[in-house]
Amino acid sequence: MPATTAEALSLVTRNVSVAPLVLLSAADHFGRSGKGLRKRVVGVLLGQNDGTNVRVSNSFAGNDDKLLINMSISLTLPSVPFEEDDKDPSVWFLDHNYVESMNDMFKKVNAREKLIGWYHSGPKLRASDLEINELFKRYTPNPLLVIIDVQPKEVGVPTDAYFAVEEIKDDGTTTTKTFVHTPSIIEAEEAEEIGVEHLLRDIRDVAVGTLSTRITSQLQSLQGLHLRLRDIGQYLQKVLDHELPVNHAILGNLQDVFNLLPNLSNPTASPQMTDGADNPSHIENTELARAMSTKTNDQLMAIYLSSLIRAITAFHDLIENKIQNRQQQEEKDAKNEEGKENKDEKKTNGVVDGESKDTKEEEKSPKAKGKENEKKR
Image (cartoon, rainbow, N blue to C red):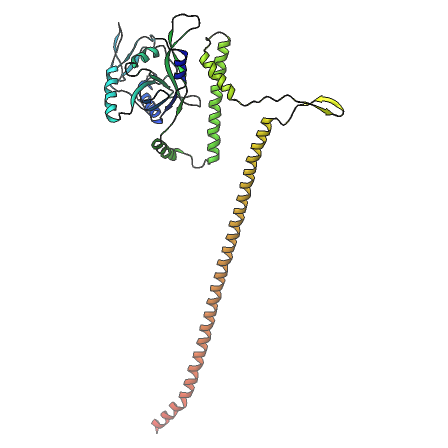
């Protein structure tokens, strides 16, 4: 049954979130299987699909020797569950028996993760993707296709999500299958965020501060936004040149985007009297300019206050340091004075003791002389 426009819009407006673990698994799959052969790899996506939000939390790929089979071709190929002929897009092989056995194994491990679609390393859609997508309809009604760019050349989100729908043409001809793009984001759960944070600690440059990191991330975000805007401009130009048909769903989404943009146009200026003549002048302080200046002033005020607080804290630390140094110097001087006084007391005590000994010897000497004289007699 052909899909209506409302059904197509419901697929386009679904929120698709991909876990970082899926990106890591796809990159590892490509590195083990397709990097040397320069071929794309295909895997299976697991997660939850409640009709509004699609959460891709896990994936798997195979590593067994398989056989490429078509109506008239039979070849033995490398150890991956998917193979295709580069020259003939209709020649491809996907081992659905392996997919079913692996799906049953994953159900035993985690029953919440169900088969919701498939992925390949792209980096673009290919002619055989619709046929492969029909094969995955055995396991899920609306399989999700995620193209994961394992070797990105531009800054941005390395995933593109698609759903297959039947396109209704304006001229009333037979409907055809096509893919509609739906936005996707990379979203990690709490456990994954902790693991990624621990990994980034090992590869993060300690010499780079937080400000430069934030500026770098903002620059990358702006570059990604620029690429998206460029793609939109190229699509609209192709529609104007009649190279692509008009898609009302895409135009409706673009109109919603344009409606969310702020009003950057200057309001019509009212005539004012200048030097006795009626000369219309443009209003310099528009609403946008006032809003920008207000926000800028608020940010500058925060910077000014933070600078004042930093300077006061630095002065406070300097004063505390000087007070501590002065106290330590005073304690050191007091100890030195006490040491000198103790030395002086010891010296005075030594002199007094010496004088007392001399006097005692002088007192004893006459008596000793008398005793000696008596002995001689």
